[in-house]
Amino acid sequence: MKNKNHFIDVGDSFAKKLSKKNPDQISVEYCMMELTEHLMFISEVFNKLGIELAGMGMEIAAGTGTFSCSIARLYPNIEKIYALEIVPEVVKILQPKIIKHTNMQGRVIPMIGDFNNIQLPDNSLDFVIGYNSFHHSNDLKKTMAEVSRVLKSGGKLIFIDRAAPNYMTKAQEDWLLNRDYPKEYKIQHGIDPKKPYTRAQHGEHEPRFYDWDIAIFNANLKLDSIAIFTQKTFKRFIKILLSFVPFFIRAWFRRFLYLIVPRKFLLYYICSPLAGYGKLKFFTLRTKLKTKAMAAMLLHMVFTAHKN
Image 1 (cartoon, rainbow, N blue to C red):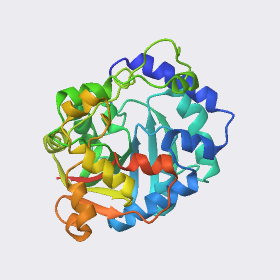
Image 2: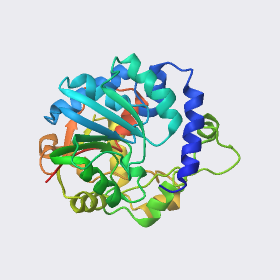
Image 3: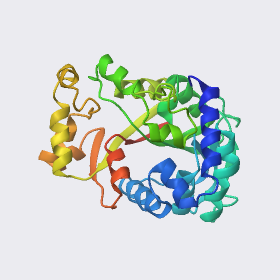
């Protein structure tokens, strides 16, 4: 991860600011959902995908451990989930609050560490999960290889993250990564609001579909499916249509530069049943999410894979 020490410093500062907030507020800051809302969302997603989990697992770049706690609550046959997070204060201060609030002590285990150097033996885990985390990797191939190392044969990898269409131009990628964070975000995270702080500085990347495919394949993992859970609205339909306008035209008008969605999204609106076929699948999300969380789901997908 680029600027890893700076990323950790920012994370430590943010964790200390959140230390006096309640578990729901902490979950919203990290997952854009309250804990019950997150549990309902994960329950619907995993049930519709037919996912079953048991044994020993790990969440990569777990943040507050909200995802781990939701998974542990849904699957009683899970023994332990290691909530691996590189920011020490998040592990020390925030994870225990979420774990205690959800009564997951002893099943969700806080763990400071790097997803490129997991301190667990080979073939020791039944599953690995991730929530909006893998796109922070500076080297997806290396990260996926490390995940594969700790997974048992047949072990499952399930993560929620973003994937840009392969046709995304370099100009749009650069624009997305070099956007300056809003002043409010900088103040909230203890960053000097007068200085630029971009998504690239925060360790963000915009992997395309083929980046995920290559990293997963090279790690001796097999990609099973990619699923998008969303809800139809007229406003989103218009945005999908606008995303078909070439980026250089939008850049010239300085409008809707952030829009980048798979073209199959249009099929979901025109003929939903057909959008459920193929490796990239679309599902209508029944769980009612707040605006901020729902908008984020347009950018995130659920990847399922297993170790050969």
